Image 1 (spheres, one colour):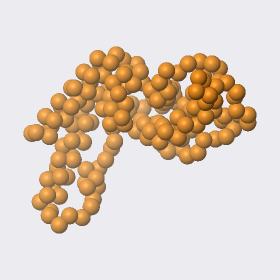
Image 2: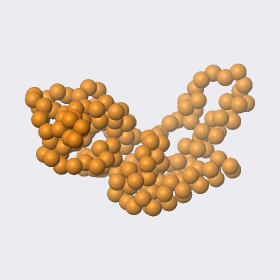
Image 3: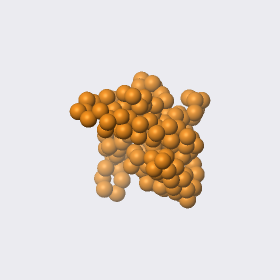
Image 4: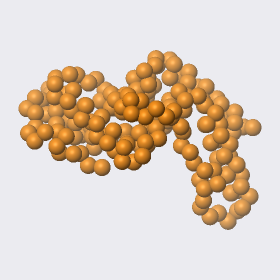
Length: 182
């Protein structure tokens, strides 16, 4: 997935920030650092690979257009997740589903100990079932946290308070721990 040169116009915008970095350079750096994560997030939301790639490009195009118009983006990473989230909601009515791994194929590697393999398959199946029992917001918060976003960034992406993110994550981890302890 490469940055489409037509997306950024033919000539770089001359405006620079205080460090002398052009808008185009800022967007290219951010693109290189975050494109895989944004793309992965859109795949997680249930989009086919080609559509997720298009939406990823759209999110970065919006970033470029906002920055080139002189708008300030305080946290480009969280801003991109928010834009991707909104693009996903507008173009896809399906409820987000957590990774739909088949517990029988999730641990397909060969192991010499069949008892350990069976225990791990049951544990994976239990965990997957517990994840599916979480609310959509709990799953989404958990997924974004696993992607490395902080509470404030998750709050910005989903449009809820930071304390609500903390509560969703606390409840989700309690339920998952409880399911694994059973």
